[in-house]
Image (cartoon, rainbow, N blue to C red; front, side, top):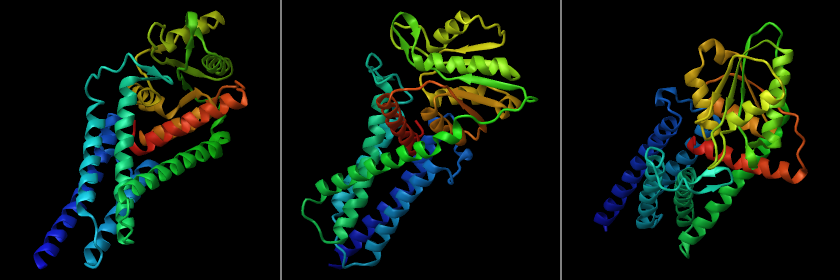
Length: 340
Protein backbone atom coordinates (compact mmCIF):
# COMPACT_ATOMS: atom_id res chain seq x y z
CA UNK A 1 0.00 0.00 0.00
CA UNK A 2 2.83 2.37 0.92
CA UNK A 3 4.60 1.51 -2.31
CA UNK A 4 1.46 2.39 -4.28
CA UNK A 5 1.09 5.72 -2.47
CA UNK A 6 4.73 6.55 -3.10
CA UNK A 7 4.31 5.76 -6.81
CA UNK A 8 1.27 8.02 -6.97
CA UNK A 9 3.17 10.83 -5.27
CA UNK A 10 6.03 10.43 -7.73
CA UNK A 11 3.61 10.70 -10.67
CA UNK A 12 2.01 13.79 -9.12
CA UNK A 13 5.42 15.43 -8.65
CA UNK A 14 6.26 14.67 -12.27
CA UNK A 15 2.95 16.14 -13.43
CA UNK A 16 3.60 19.32 -11.44
CA UNK A 17 7.09 19.69 -12.93
CA UNK A 18 5.86 18.86 -16.45
CA UNK A 19 3.15 21.53 -16.22
CA UNK A 20 5.66 24.16 -15.14
CA UNK A 21 7.93 23.25 -18.04
CA UNK A 22 5.00 23.35 -20.44
CA UNK A 23 4.08 26.89 -19.37
CA UNK A 24 7.65 28.01 -20.04
CA UNK A 25 7.56 26.20 -23.40
CA UNK A 26 4.25 27.90 -24.31
CA UNK A 27 5.66 31.36 -23.55
CA UNK A 28 8.81 30.53 -25.51
CA UNK A 29 6.73 29.40 -28.51
CA UNK A 30 4.48 32.47 -28.34
CA UNK A 31 7.41 34.85 -28.56
CA UNK A 32 9.09 32.74 -31.23
CA UNK A 33 5.82 32.88 -33.21
CA UNK A 34 6.21 36.66 -33.25
CA UNK A 35 9.96 36.55 -33.95
CA UNK A 36 10.69 37.91 -30.49
CA UNK A 37 12.98 36.73 -27.72
CA UNK A 38 11.36 35.41 -24.55
CA UNK A 39 13.37 38.14 -22.80
CA UNK A 40 10.60 40.48 -24.03
CA UNK A 41 7.98 38.63 -21.99
CA UNK A 42 5.40 40.67 -20.11
CA UNK A 43 3.24 38.48 -17.86
CA UNK A 44 0.79 41.35 -17.28
CA UNK A 45 -0.56 41.50 -20.85
CA UNK A 46 -3.92 39.81 -21.33
CA UNK A 47 -2.97 36.62 -23.17
CA UNK A 48 0.05 35.82 -21.00
CA UNK A 49 -2.03 36.40 -17.89
CA UNK A 50 -4.71 33.98 -19.13
CA UNK A 51 -2.03 31.33 -19.75
CA UNK A 52 -0.59 31.82 -16.28
CA UNK A 53 -3.98 31.57 -14.55
CA UNK A 54 -4.81 28.29 -16.30
CA UNK A 55 -1.50 26.72 -15.29
CA UNK A 56 -1.72 28.02 -11.72
CA UNK A 57 -5.15 26.43 -11.37
CA UNK A 58 -3.72 23.14 -12.64
CA UNK A 59 -0.76 23.28 -10.26
CA UNK A 60 -2.92 24.17 -7.23
CA UNK A 61 -5.30 21.28 -7.94
CA UNK A 62 -2.38 18.85 -8.22
CA UNK A 63 -0.94 20.14 -4.93
CA UNK A 64 -4.31 19.59 -3.23
CA UNK A 65 -4.34 15.99 -4.46
CA UNK A 66 -0.71 15.52 -3.38
CA UNK A 67 -1.39 16.82 0.15
CA UNK A 68 -4.58 14.80 0.60
CA UNK A 69 -3.93 11.05 0.16
CA UNK A 70 -7.64 10.32 0.52
CA UNK A 71 -8.32 11.86 -2.89
CA UNK A 72 -8.08 9.18 -5.56
CA UNK A 73 -7.34 10.50 -9.04
CA UNK A 74 -7.07 8.67 -12.35
CA UNK A 75 -3.38 9.33 -12.87
CA UNK A 76 -3.27 7.37 -16.13
CA UNK A 77 -5.91 9.67 -17.62
CA UNK A 78 -4.13 12.78 -16.36
CA UNK A 79 -0.79 11.60 -17.70
CA UNK A 80 -2.33 10.76 -21.08
CA UNK A 81 -3.96 14.19 -21.29
CA UNK A 82 -0.74 16.01 -20.41
CA UNK A 83 1.28 14.00 -22.93
CA UNK A 84 -1.37 14.75 -25.58
CA UNK A 85 -1.27 18.47 -24.78
CA UNK A 86 2.51 18.44 -25.20
CA UNK A 87 2.11 16.67 -28.53
CA UNK A 88 -0.42 19.16 -29.93
CA UNK A 89 1.63 22.12 -28.62
CA UNK A 90 4.81 20.84 -30.28
CA UNK A 91 3.09 20.00 -33.59
CA UNK A 92 1.45 23.43 -33.63
CA UNK A 93 4.79 25.17 -33.17
CA UNK A 94 6.67 22.96 -35.64
CA UNK A 95 3.95 23.60 -38.25
CA UNK A 96 4.93 27.30 -38.23
CA UNK A 97 8.53 26.43 -39.08
CA UNK A 98 8.07 24.01 -41.99
CA UNK A 99 6.32 24.10 -45.35
CA UNK A 100 3.10 22.13 -45.06
CA UNK A 101 1.14 20.94 -48.11
CA UNK A 102 -2.14 22.68 -47.20
CA UNK A 103 -1.73 26.12 -48.78
CA UNK A 104 -3.88 25.14 -51.75
CA UNK A 105 -6.77 25.37 -49.27
CA UNK A 106 -8.07 28.91 -48.74
CA UNK A 107 -11.00 29.27 -46.31
CA UNK A 108 -12.37 32.43 -44.61
CA UNK A 109 -9.36 34.42 -45.81
CA UNK A 110 -6.86 31.98 -44.32
CA UNK A 111 -4.43 29.59 -46.00
CA UNK A 112 -4.57 25.91 -45.07
CA UNK A 113 -1.20 25.89 -43.32
CA UNK A 114 -2.37 28.52 -40.84
CA UNK A 115 -5.66 26.71 -40.31
CA UNK A 116 -3.71 23.53 -39.48
CA UNK A 117 -1.54 25.43 -36.99
CA UNK A 118 -4.61 26.98 -35.39
CA UNK A 119 -6.27 23.56 -35.11
CA UNK A 120 -3.23 22.06 -33.36
CA UNK A 121 -3.03 24.88 -30.83
CA UNK A 122 -6.79 24.73 -30.23
CA UNK A 123 -6.60 20.99 -29.54
CA UNK A 124 -3.72 21.64 -27.14
CA UNK A 125 -5.87 24.14 -25.21
CA UNK A 126 -8.87 21.80 -25.22
CA UNK A 127 -6.81 18.94 -23.82
CA UNK A 128 -5.20 21.16 -21.17
CA UNK A 129 -8.60 22.36 -19.97
CA UNK A 130 -9.79 18.75 -19.97
CA UNK A 131 -6.82 17.98 -17.68
CA UNK A 132 -8.14 20.57 -15.21
CA UNK A 133 -11.72 19.30 -15.31
CA UNK A 134 -10.56 15.69 -14.96
CA UNK A 135 -8.85 16.76 -11.74
CA UNK A 136 -11.93 18.62 -10.47
CA UNK A 137 -14.34 15.79 -11.30
CA UNK A 138 -11.98 13.21 -9.84
CA UNK A 139 -11.70 15.15 -6.57
CA UNK A 140 -15.47 15.07 -6.32
CA UNK A 141 -15.36 11.29 -6.87
CA UNK A 142 -17.43 11.81 -9.97
CA UNK A 143 -15.65 9.12 -11.97
CA UNK A 144 -18.51 8.21 -14.29
CA UNK A 145 -17.61 9.20 -17.89
CA UNK A 146 -15.04 11.62 -16.51
CA UNK A 147 -13.23 12.03 -19.84
CA UNK A 148 -16.36 12.89 -21.83
CA UNK A 149 -17.55 15.30 -19.15
CA UNK A 150 -14.16 17.03 -18.95
CA UNK A 151 -14.14 17.53 -22.72
CA UNK A 152 -17.68 18.94 -22.62
CA UNK A 153 -16.86 21.39 -19.80
CA UNK A 154 -13.69 22.42 -21.64
CA UNK A 155 -15.64 23.23 -24.79
CA UNK A 156 -18.04 25.35 -22.71
CA UNK A 157 -15.12 27.28 -21.17
CA UNK A 158 -13.61 27.89 -24.62
CA UNK A 159 -16.95 29.24 -25.86
CA UNK A 160 -17.18 31.52 -22.81
CA UNK A 161 -13.68 32.84 -23.49
CA UNK A 162 -14.72 33.55 -27.08
CA UNK A 163 -17.77 35.45 -25.81
CA UNK A 164 -15.50 37.45 -23.50
CA UNK A 165 -13.31 38.33 -26.50
CA UNK A 166 -16.40 39.48 -28.40
CA UNK A 167 -17.46 41.82 -25.58
CA UNK A 168 -13.86 42.99 -25.20
CA UNK A 169 -13.91 44.15 -28.82
CA UNK A 170 -17.35 45.74 -28.57
CA UNK A 171 -16.46 47.63 -25.39
CA UNK A 172 -13.26 49.10 -26.89
CA UNK A 173 -14.33 49.72 -30.46
CA UNK A 174 -15.30 53.35 -29.94
CA UNK A 175 -12.00 54.18 -28.20
CA UNK A 176 -9.83 53.09 -31.12
CA UNK A 177 -11.84 54.57 -34.00
CA UNK A 178 -10.26 58.01 -34.13
CA UNK A 179 -7.24 58.72 -31.96
CA UNK A 180 -6.24 62.38 -32.25
CA UNK A 181 -3.32 63.46 -34.45
CA UNK A 182 -1.58 66.78 -33.98
CA UNK A 183 -0.50 69.16 -36.74
CA UNK A 184 3.20 69.27 -35.83
CA UNK A 185 4.13 65.57 -35.73
CA UNK A 186 5.28 63.76 -38.85
CA UNK A 187 3.44 60.43 -39.01
CA UNK A 188 3.94 57.10 -40.74
CA UNK A 189 0.60 55.73 -41.94
CA UNK A 190 -0.06 52.04 -42.54
CA UNK A 191 -3.08 50.73 -44.44
CA UNK A 192 -3.67 47.08 -43.58
CA UNK A 193 -4.77 44.85 -46.44
CA UNK A 194 -8.27 43.44 -46.94
CA UNK A 195 -10.05 41.24 -49.45
CA UNK A 196 -9.62 41.72 -53.19
CA UNK A 197 -12.63 41.03 -55.40
CA UNK A 198 -12.73 39.57 -58.92
CA UNK A 199 -10.84 41.42 -61.65
CA UNK A 200 -8.46 42.65 -58.94
CA UNK A 201 -10.86 45.26 -57.62
CA UNK A 202 -10.61 46.37 -54.00
CA UNK A 203 -13.41 45.17 -51.78
CA UNK A 204 -15.43 47.98 -50.16
CA UNK A 205 -13.49 47.35 -46.93
CA UNK A 206 -10.11 47.79 -48.63
CA UNK A 207 -11.29 50.82 -50.64
CA UNK A 208 -12.63 52.50 -47.48
CA UNK A 209 -9.30 52.01 -45.73
CA UNK A 210 -7.42 53.62 -48.62
CA UNK A 211 -9.98 56.46 -48.71
CA UNK A 212 -9.25 57.17 -45.04
CA UNK A 213 -5.50 57.17 -45.78
CA UNK A 214 -6.08 59.70 -48.59
CA UNK A 215 -7.92 61.91 -46.12
CA UNK A 216 -4.97 61.70 -43.71
CA UNK A 217 -2.53 62.58 -46.51
CA UNK A 218 -4.53 65.72 -47.27
CA UNK A 219 -5.05 66.90 -43.70
CA UNK A 220 -1.93 65.87 -41.74
CA UNK A 221 1.82 65.80 -42.00
CA UNK A 222 2.43 62.29 -43.34
CA UNK A 223 6.05 61.26 -43.91
CA UNK A 224 5.52 57.75 -45.30
CA UNK A 225 2.63 55.52 -46.37
CA UNK A 226 2.72 51.72 -46.17
CA UNK A 227 0.27 49.57 -48.14
CA UNK A 228 0.33 45.98 -46.88
CA UNK A 229 -1.07 42.57 -47.66
CA UNK A 230 -0.37 39.57 -49.88
CA UNK A 231 -2.75 37.80 -52.22
CA UNK A 232 -5.08 34.87 -52.52
CA UNK A 233 -4.36 32.45 -55.40
CA UNK A 234 -4.89 34.10 -58.81
CA UNK A 235 -5.11 37.69 -57.52
CA UNK A 236 -2.88 40.72 -57.32
CA UNK A 237 -1.71 41.36 -53.78
CA UNK A 238 -3.88 43.47 -51.52
CA UNK A 239 -1.09 46.05 -51.36
CA UNK A 240 -0.88 46.29 -55.17
CA UNK A 241 -4.64 46.62 -55.51
CA UNK A 242 -4.62 49.34 -52.85
CA UNK A 243 -1.87 51.13 -54.80
CA UNK A 244 -3.87 50.94 -58.04
CA UNK A 245 -6.92 52.30 -56.25
CA UNK A 246 -4.82 55.13 -54.83
CA UNK A 247 -3.60 56.02 -58.33
CA UNK A 248 -7.18 56.00 -59.64
CA UNK A 249 -7.92 58.77 -57.12
CA UNK A 250 -5.14 60.93 -58.60
CA UNK A 251 -3.27 61.12 -55.32
CA UNK A 252 0.28 62.40 -55.67
CA UNK A 253 2.44 61.12 -52.83
CA UNK A 254 5.91 59.81 -53.51
CA UNK A 255 6.97 58.06 -50.30
CA UNK A 256 4.82 54.93 -50.61
CA UNK A 257 6.04 51.47 -49.58
CA UNK A 258 4.26 48.38 -50.95
CA UNK A 259 4.59 45.31 -48.74
CA UNK A 260 3.03 42.29 -50.45
CA UNK A 261 4.41 39.27 -48.57
CA UNK A 262 2.60 39.30 -45.23
CA UNK A 263 -0.48 37.10 -44.95
CA UNK A 264 -1.89 38.16 -41.57
CA UNK A 265 -2.20 41.07 -39.17
CA UNK A 266 0.43 39.59 -36.85
CA UNK A 267 2.90 39.33 -39.74
CA UNK A 268 2.19 42.92 -40.72
CA UNK A 269 2.92 44.15 -37.19
CA UNK A 270 6.13 42.09 -37.17
CA UNK A 271 7.12 43.67 -40.49
CA UNK A 272 6.54 47.17 -39.15
CA UNK A 273 8.47 46.44 -35.96
CA UNK A 274 11.49 45.26 -37.94
CA UNK A 275 11.30 47.85 -40.73
CA UNK A 276 10.56 51.12 -38.96
CA UNK A 277 13.01 53.28 -37.06
CA UNK A 278 12.34 54.07 -33.41
CA UNK A 279 11.07 57.55 -34.35
CA UNK A 280 8.70 56.10 -36.96
CA UNK A 281 7.44 53.50 -34.46
CA UNK A 282 6.61 56.26 -31.99
CA UNK A 283 4.56 58.13 -34.61
CA UNK A 284 2.81 55.20 -36.23
CA UNK A 285 -0.81 55.40 -37.39
CA UNK A 286 -2.63 52.24 -38.48
CA UNK A 287 -5.75 52.46 -40.63
CA UNK A 288 -8.29 49.65 -40.60
CA UNK A 289 -11.88 48.95 -39.55
CA UNK A 290 -13.01 49.57 -35.99
CA UNK A 291 -13.74 45.88 -35.32
CA UNK A 292 -10.17 45.06 -36.47
CA UNK A 293 -8.37 47.83 -34.60
CA UNK A 294 -8.93 46.35 -31.13
CA UNK A 295 -6.93 43.22 -32.07
CA UNK A 296 -4.28 45.40 -33.71
CA UNK A 297 -3.87 47.24 -30.41
CA UNK A 298 -3.44 43.94 -28.54
CA UNK A 299 -0.86 42.65 -31.03
CA UNK A 300 1.00 45.97 -30.84
CA UNK A 301 1.11 45.76 -27.03
CA UNK A 302 2.70 42.33 -27.35
CA UNK A 303 5.39 43.93 -29.52
CA UNK A 304 5.64 46.96 -27.22
CA UNK A 305 4.59 49.24 -30.06
CA UNK A 306 2.70 52.40 -29.16
CA UNK A 307 0.41 53.07 -32.08
CA UNK A 308 -2.43 55.38 -32.96
CA UNK A 309 -5.42 53.92 -34.76
CA UNK A 310 -7.87 55.40 -37.25
CA UNK A 311 -10.97 53.59 -38.48
CA UNK A 312 -12.31 53.75 -42.00
CA UNK A 313 -15.78 55.20 -42.45
CA UNK A 314 -17.36 52.23 -44.20
CA UNK A 315 -20.80 51.37 -42.87
CA UNK A 316 -21.48 47.64 -43.02
CA UNK A 317 -24.82 45.92 -42.78
CA UNK A 318 -25.76 44.51 -39.38
CA UNK A 319 -25.01 40.92 -40.40
CA UNK A 320 -21.69 41.84 -42.08
CA UNK A 321 -20.65 43.77 -38.99
CA UNK A 322 -21.66 40.85 -36.75
CA UNK A 323 -19.82 38.32 -38.91
CA UNK A 324 -16.62 40.38 -38.98
CA UNK A 325 -16.75 41.08 -35.24
CA UNK A 326 -17.21 37.38 -34.36
CA UNK A 327 -14.36 36.51 -36.72
CA UNK A 328 -12.19 39.12 -34.99
CA UNK A 329 -13.15 37.75 -31.57
CA UNK A 330 -11.97 34.31 -32.66
CA UNK A 331 -8.72 35.74 -34.06
CA UNK A 332 -8.15 37.78 -30.88
CA UNK A 333 -8.66 34.70 -28.68
CA UNK A 334 -6.18 32.71 -30.76
CA UNK A 335 -3.66 35.55 -30.53
CA UNK A 336 -4.10 35.95 -26.77
CA UNK A 337 -3.48 32.28 -26.07
CA UNK A 338 -0.93 31.33 -28.74
CA UNK A 339 0.38 34.56 -30.36
CA UNK A 340 -0.48 33.43 -33.89
